[in-house]
Amino acid sequence: MKTLGTSLALAALFALASLPALSLAGPKTSETPVQVPASLRPYSASFTQPSPPIVASEFRASFNQHKWDQNVSNIASGFLYSSASLGKVRVDEAFDGALASSLFDFANVTADGLVLNSLWQLSPAITSQPTCQQYRVNSNFPLVPGDLLVGANAVFGGQRMDPFNGVVGEVSFPVG
Image (cartoon, rainbow, N blue to C red):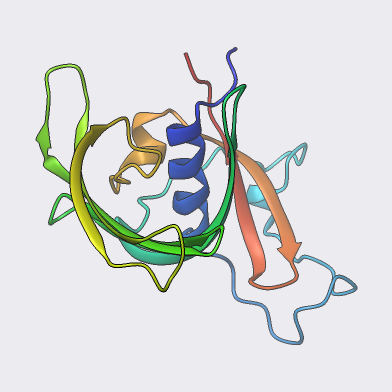
């Protein structure tokens, strides 16, 4: 099994953030035991593998990203807006004293998979004159289709208590 590529890993992360969870009464603390129906308890005699859920394909999310290789190390924080119905992902980010906003247009993709990116930025500092450019890129921010987990043959991995969201479902799927 191969490791997740950056784009697929981000898609999985965003998809998992939109999974529905069981509703529990009481505070969301790590001391609260996770009450899971027997049909969802792994190793239970009544366990049945649930079908992968449909996930939200229209969402907003904040992110922190560290990209690096032998030539670059870039740390950015920002907010993204993903709309599968419009075929666009907008990413607003701050990095190294600069501000930027990218609009990835997935309706405008080349045969080799490069996505049109319209980039507006204030760089090298926020006091700089704004610039606008268009590039064709291999996007690190993919569109997330609603059937991402279904198409990836996702397998239920259990439920756990998340300190921010309460009980969340976990899934895994092979890549490659």
